[in-house]
Image 1 (spheres, rainbow, N blue to C red):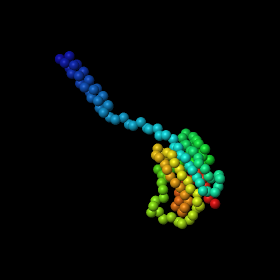
Image 2 (cartoon, rainbow, N blue to C red):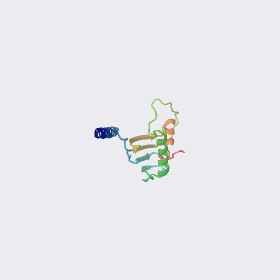
Image 3 (cartoon, one colour):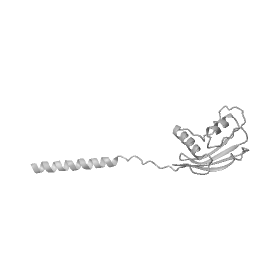
Length: 147
Protein backbone atom coordinates (compact mmCIF):
# COMPACT_ATOMS: atom_id res chain seq x y z
CA UNK A 1 0.00 0.00 0.00
CA UNK A 2 2.80 2.41 0.87
CA UNK A 3 4.54 1.50 -2.35
CA UNK A 4 1.35 2.18 -4.31
CA UNK A 5 1.03 5.67 -2.69
CA UNK A 6 4.68 6.37 -3.45
CA UNK A 7 4.22 5.38 -7.11
CA UNK A 8 1.01 7.43 -7.40
CA UNK A 9 2.63 10.44 -5.73
CA UNK A 10 5.65 10.16 -8.03
CA UNK A 11 3.40 9.87 -11.07
CA UNK A 12 1.36 12.89 -9.96
CA UNK A 13 4.52 14.93 -9.39
CA UNK A 14 5.86 13.95 -12.80
CA UNK A 15 2.55 14.87 -14.45
CA UNK A 16 2.47 18.25 -12.72
CA UNK A 17 6.07 18.97 -13.67
CA UNK A 18 5.41 18.01 -17.28
CA UNK A 19 2.24 20.09 -17.31
CA UNK A 20 4.09 23.11 -15.98
CA UNK A 21 6.85 22.65 -18.55
CA UNK A 22 4.29 22.51 -21.37
CA UNK A 23 2.45 25.53 -19.97
CA UNK A 24 5.69 27.46 -19.64
CA UNK A 25 6.72 26.64 -23.18
CA UNK A 26 3.28 27.63 -24.51
CA UNK A 27 3.67 31.16 -23.19
CA UNK A 28 5.35 33.24 -25.88
CA UNK A 29 8.44 35.10 -24.88
CA UNK A 30 8.26 38.87 -25.13
CA UNK A 31 9.89 40.13 -28.31
CA UNK A 32 13.44 41.26 -28.02
CA UNK A 33 13.82 44.98 -28.58
CA UNK A 34 14.90 45.56 -32.13
CA UNK A 35 17.94 47.68 -32.53
CA UNK A 36 16.97 50.27 -35.06
CA UNK A 37 19.69 51.77 -37.19
CA UNK A 38 20.69 55.32 -36.34
CA UNK A 39 18.88 58.21 -37.99
CA UNK A 40 20.78 59.06 -41.15
CA UNK A 41 19.78 62.03 -43.28
CA UNK A 42 21.05 64.08 -46.19
CA UNK A 43 20.02 67.74 -46.18
CA UNK A 44 20.34 69.74 -49.41
CA UNK A 45 19.61 73.48 -49.47
CA UNK A 46 19.62 75.73 -52.54
CA UNK A 47 18.44 79.15 -53.63
CA UNK A 48 19.10 81.00 -50.38
CA UNK A 49 21.66 83.41 -51.78
CA UNK A 50 23.79 82.80 -48.68
CA UNK A 51 26.86 80.59 -49.30
CA UNK A 52 26.86 79.49 -45.64
CA UNK A 53 23.30 78.19 -45.93
CA UNK A 54 23.79 76.46 -49.29
CA UNK A 55 24.97 72.93 -49.86
CA UNK A 56 24.43 69.33 -49.06
CA UNK A 57 25.27 67.79 -45.70
CA UNK A 58 25.16 64.36 -44.13
CA UNK A 59 23.83 63.88 -40.62
CA UNK A 60 23.79 60.72 -38.53
CA UNK A 61 22.20 60.83 -35.09
CA UNK A 62 23.44 57.97 -32.94
CA UNK A 63 25.21 57.98 -29.59
CA UNK A 64 26.93 61.08 -30.84
CA UNK A 65 26.12 63.15 -33.93
CA UNK A 66 28.21 62.41 -36.99
CA UNK A 67 28.54 63.82 -40.46
CA UNK A 68 29.40 67.19 -41.96
CA UNK A 69 26.14 68.97 -41.05
CA UNK A 70 27.18 72.41 -39.66
CA UNK A 71 24.88 72.12 -36.61
CA UNK A 72 24.92 68.34 -36.14
CA UNK A 73 24.51 68.20 -32.35
CA UNK A 74 21.69 70.74 -32.25
CA UNK A 75 19.95 69.15 -35.27
CA UNK A 76 20.04 65.70 -33.61
CA UNK A 77 18.71 67.18 -30.35
CA UNK A 78 15.84 68.80 -32.26
CA UNK A 79 15.00 65.55 -34.07
CA UNK A 80 15.12 63.63 -30.79
CA UNK A 81 12.65 66.13 -29.34
CA UNK A 82 10.24 65.43 -32.20
CA UNK A 83 10.60 61.68 -31.64
CA UNK A 84 9.91 61.98 -27.89
CA UNK A 85 6.83 64.12 -28.58
CA UNK A 86 5.57 61.72 -31.27
CA UNK A 87 5.65 64.48 -33.89
CA UNK A 88 6.55 64.13 -37.55
CA UNK A 89 8.71 67.09 -38.59
CA UNK A 90 8.72 65.86 -42.19
CA UNK A 91 4.95 65.80 -42.72
CA UNK A 92 3.84 68.16 -45.49
CA UNK A 93 1.53 71.08 -44.87
CA UNK A 94 -2.04 69.71 -45.09
CA UNK A 95 -3.70 70.48 -48.42
CA UNK A 96 -6.62 72.21 -46.68
CA UNK A 97 -4.42 74.48 -44.50
CA UNK A 98 -5.11 78.20 -44.65
CA UNK A 99 -1.75 79.87 -45.11
CA UNK A 100 -0.78 83.52 -45.12
CA UNK A 101 0.49 84.69 -48.47
CA UNK A 102 3.88 85.76 -47.19
CA UNK A 103 6.79 84.92 -49.44
CA UNK A 104 9.97 83.89 -47.65
CA UNK A 105 12.19 83.72 -50.70
CA UNK A 106 13.22 81.15 -53.31
CA UNK A 107 15.18 78.89 -50.94
CA UNK A 108 14.30 75.20 -51.02
CA UNK A 109 15.51 72.16 -49.13
CA UNK A 110 15.22 68.43 -49.50
CA UNK A 111 15.77 65.96 -46.68
CA UNK A 112 16.26 62.29 -47.56
CA UNK A 113 17.32 59.21 -45.64
CA UNK A 114 15.92 57.42 -42.60
CA UNK A 115 14.47 58.79 -39.39
CA UNK A 116 12.95 56.70 -36.61
CA UNK A 117 13.25 53.63 -38.84
CA UNK A 118 11.28 55.02 -41.78
CA UNK A 119 12.26 56.40 -45.16
CA UNK A 120 12.21 60.17 -45.49
CA UNK A 121 11.96 62.22 -48.68
CA UNK A 122 10.70 65.64 -47.63
CA UNK A 123 10.80 68.93 -49.47
CA UNK A 124 10.75 72.32 -47.77
CA UNK A 125 10.29 75.84 -49.10
CA UNK A 126 9.38 79.28 -47.82
CA UNK A 127 6.62 79.88 -50.37
CA UNK A 128 3.97 80.94 -47.82
CA UNK A 129 3.36 81.34 -44.09
CA UNK A 130 2.71 77.64 -43.50
CA UNK A 131 5.87 76.59 -45.33
CA UNK A 132 7.92 79.23 -43.51
CA UNK A 133 6.62 77.91 -40.16
CA UNK A 134 7.39 74.35 -41.21
CA UNK A 135 10.95 75.35 -42.18
CA UNK A 136 11.59 77.25 -38.97
CA UNK A 137 10.13 74.39 -36.91
CA UNK A 138 12.94 72.06 -38.01
CA UNK A 139 15.78 74.52 -37.55
CA UNK A 140 18.68 73.81 -37.00
CA UNK A 141 18.25 70.75 -39.23
CA UNK A 142 17.58 73.33 -41.93
CA UNK A 143 19.63 76.52 -41.73
CA UNK A 144 18.14 79.80 -40.60
CA UNK A 145 17.64 81.91 -43.72
CA UNK A 146 15.71 84.79 -42.19
CA UNK A 147 16.50 88.22 -43.53
